[in-house]
Structures are given as structure tokens and as C-alpha cells.
Image 1: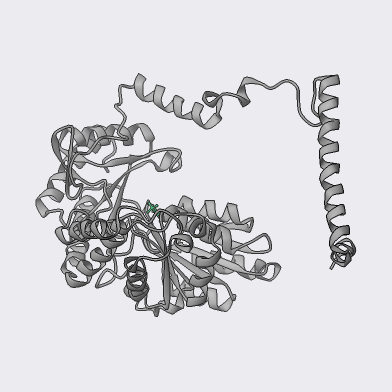
Image 2: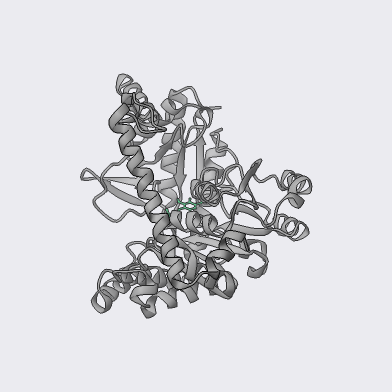
Length: 456
Ligand SMILES: Cc1ncc(COP(=O)(O)O)c(C=O)c1O
């Protein structure tokens, strides 16, 4: 204990009060001196007097200016914005925009469970029973049985002890990583890891190192060089990469994390419901024990037809996050209809594994047909995510708009979401897509790529 602290705690109650009062007075004296100085000189001690427009106007933020450049470029090339289109019905294999129906490749409704009768009914029943909100953090407002049932069902899916549900998938990564790790720790992540993981690492203050995509050997080398300089080490990968649609060799990562005494976190946002015989994700795909991964992360917003995120793992991890992770402690509990929808979606997924197989079949079909036509699908493994690389943001936006005129809705992914040369269209496949829809789409895609000079 420091000398000043021990002295403070050795004081009588009265002396402590006096000391605290002195400290408070000192602060007010400081600020009075500041005010006097400001009156005399027109300046606060450390502040610059000339504040440029740059720092006082939202339209001068550099990132906003960059957005304007994109908008101007699109306007001058007569490319309509493909973003924020208004959909007026359930988005599944088809969607309705401005009263017209399109074949839809822009939603994560992988197993068609958003809009499924059982899922919607469960959400409605939960509203009738509990209302639309729990109106405070679970620590304060208490539990609803549906929340714990969902957490237990998720823990069971991953074969681990327990699970904690947050109100957003993005916030799950930010708050869990941000809270659990600190400045003496190292976090290594795949170069293509999701933004939410990067944000979490920045919040944590840990050292951050990225390793080339799926390159477990490079990770091994980095750990051999640096492991001993840090206290805790976390490795973060995704079960299925959301931009490229490929998967990591999970067993290699497990072996490496064991050898280097590190924690392994797997973000299952896009693999749940998509890979593995029953859609249980990358763990099922490689036949690993759920407990071989330290932190399973997932979202409720994709296959599970809801909104929120979760961490599943050993009981102590979950308990720790429940009592201390700011994004759980200081945020409202998941709303009853959202918890009920996700729970019902898990039940349908388990009862109807044919949905998973149909999704996998249609993904493979799309990939095969596209590759036969010489379309550049990057590294996609042909599950739910199939990119079509266009090399430039302008070509990606033009291609998306051209497909829309043929009745196909797909989003372009452009700079800065990816490097300019890696701009692409990203097709999300779902179990409800028909063979006819896929064949039609690949045909028009091939024609339009040729018009842009992009067909092999
Ligand atoms: C890999 C990955 N992790 C986390 C998230 C965040 O999930 P949510 O959209 O449910 O907040 C996403 C979102 O797409 C994602 O792709």
C-alpha cells in the first residue's frame, strides 16, 4: 500500500473529512484560478484560442467528407445508391422493394426462420405474457424464464456449461473482449475478422496483432515470438468468414492455442445453422468438443431470426460477464419477444435439419454454376456466403443495380468496408432459394459481368 494511502486510512473520521474537504477546496481554488486567468487573458491554460471550423462542424469530419466524395462520384456516374432500400415484407428467398418482388440475396435469414409461423407465434405469445421490454438491466429488473431457457439452449448447442445473451451481436464482441482483456494482454486475430472484434480489442487496451487470413502457421510463428511478453493471450477467428465465405481449420487453431497457453474465441455469427450436419456450426463440422474452444460467440440476428448476441463457455466465464461486463450490466436485458423468437428458431432448426442440408446444397449449386462460368468467387467454400469480386467499387455498384433490373437483389460491398481492389457483390444463400432462382441469377450475373468486362 502506498504511504499516502496508508496515512489516509490511519486517520480518524474527522481528520479524513477535513482532508477530503481540503482536497475539494483545492479543486475549486484551481478552477477559480483558471477562471481568473481566462478573464485576464481570454485563454484557458492548455487550450488553443483559435478553433478552426474543422473541429466544430459535423460536415467537416474527414470520414463524412469521404462519404460525400463517394456520393458525388456515384451521382456523376449516374449510379443509384444501392443502400437503405425499403423492404415491405418478410425478407427470405424473395423480398418486396417499392411494390416489386425480387429474388433476395441480401439477408441472413439462412434457414427461413424469420417469418416462420412457430417463431412469430412464440414472439407474440411472449409479448402477451411479458410485454415488449424488460425495461432495465437483468441485474436490476430480474429474470424472465424465457431468457434463461434461451441461454441454456444455446449452451447446449455448443456443448458447454453456460451462456449469456446480450442485446446486440456487435456489442457482445465489443463489451466481452473490451472487458475481459487489458493492457498487459495480447489479442491476435484473423486479418478478415469482423469490425466488432477490432472495436473490442481497441476498448480493451490490449496489444493487437493480426495474422494473414486463415494462416495458422503465421499465427504459430507470431506466438512463438511474442507469447512470453504478455500475460493473457486471446486468439479470435470466425467459424465462417462473413466477407469471403470460407472457414478456418479449427483443429489447427485449437492445437496452437493449447501449445501457447492462449484462449481461443470463435465468432459463429455466420456458421450457426449453416455448417455442420445439423447446422451446429464449425465445432460440429470438425467434430471437436465444444469445450475445446474457450469462448463461443454468436448472434441471434442471422439463422436465429431475432436480434442480440451471446457468449457461451464455462460457467465462470459466463458468471464473470454477467456481473461485470458493462454491455450486460448497464444495458437492458433482451426483450421477451426476441428471446422467444430465438428459442423457437433453435427448436425448428433442431426439428428440421433438412433446412440446413437444403441450404448447403443450394450454396454448393450457386458456387459450382458460378465457377463453371468463370465468375471470380474468391475463396468461398459455397455455404451461405458467396462473394463475386468485381475489383472496383464502381463496378460492384453498377453490377448490383444491373441485377436489380433483372429482378435480383444483392448488396455490393465497397471501399472502405473492403480494400478498393477487393470490392464485390456478396450473395447470401438461404435454404428457401430454389434451383430455378439460383440458375437464373447465375445466368444474368454472367451476362452482366461480361458487359463490365469482368468475365474470365
Ligand atoms: C462475424 C460477425 N460478428 C458479429 C456481428 C454482429 O452481429 P449483429 O449484426 O447481430 O449485431 C456480425 C454482423 O454481421 C458478424 O458478421
